[in-house]
Image (cartoon, rainbow, N blue to C red; front, side, top):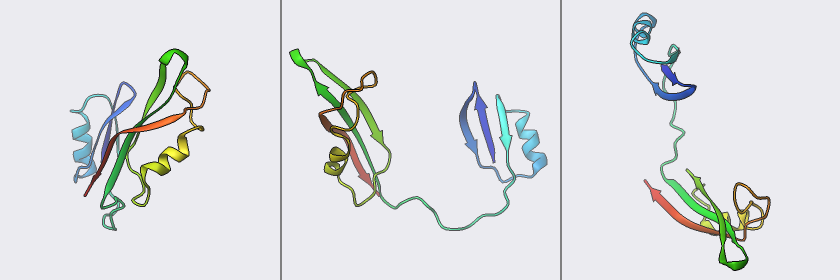
Length: 117
């Protein structure tokens, strides 16, 4: 396996079935800093769930004069047993209304919810 790091950011992790010598040759062709690992084994069971439930939502607070301060949040996978009303209960009044304030939010509105197999 090769992890490619360009400008301090991981750009790609490549899983390659190759010898250490072949990995060393491949490293000479790739840009940036590279880390390599030798595969010691394979198999096991996948840890990915069968259903992915992701949700995006905005939290914020309406201020006097109608101005709204908010921030967007994206959770890549909720537990299959959880619903948005539980997310709303967990964040409203607890999370900040935006990145620059310590004032608690008064709403959480979903904008991107999806469940896929």
